[in-house]
Image 1: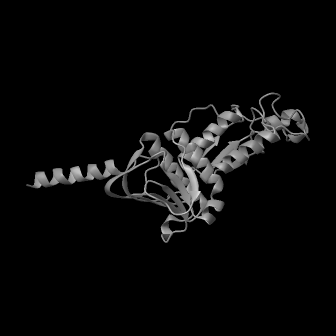
Image 2: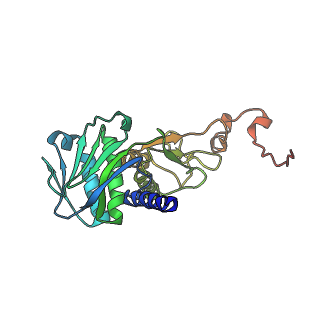
Image 3: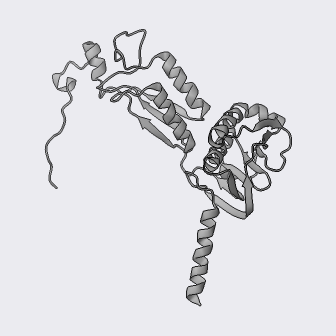
Length: 267
């Protein structure tokens, strides 16, 4: 009897895991319900009039992204949702979701609520991951929120140059995983990557980023609720500066040249 009880409990546990949407990162809290919600090309993306104005950019991006993963272009309207529609709404009564979390109720309609546009955006990323796998999803309720406030990725473009198109592809993947910053390491001893009108010749002659490139990256990151954090490294790792202008280096020879420690130390 005890073995049968244990097997039944394990089966119930496995069933609850299977019914939870398979997304990354995992949804924090999931309560399963009976039945499924099926996405249809006849459905609409619905908001109130005020929320439609406030969330317009995110809604248009979601409409485009959803079409790319599901091959369905849903109408974007204001009003009340009907059966099979996806509704986004600002304002919740659950404090723990904070500024980046969201609630998702999947029933006859699919409703995502959050306290901010960023929370709505993260709910959208969950939906995109779900509908990329299948147009059908189990009904239930998700309460999702990040545990860590700063979630990001560093790209060392000083040592290795990456094209702007590739950086944008990384930013999109970060947003997909609900990251909220990208740290760009623009300078090091290998190269200075920012083209300067005031100091021509400081940047790498061909593999550099112009002001227009940086503006493009900033705008693209903002579109996906990601902060771009630039880094200009100094005084260490500054050979790219001092080779351009030796006056910037220390006078002391021992301070002008970095030495790598190559000795093996035994405990």
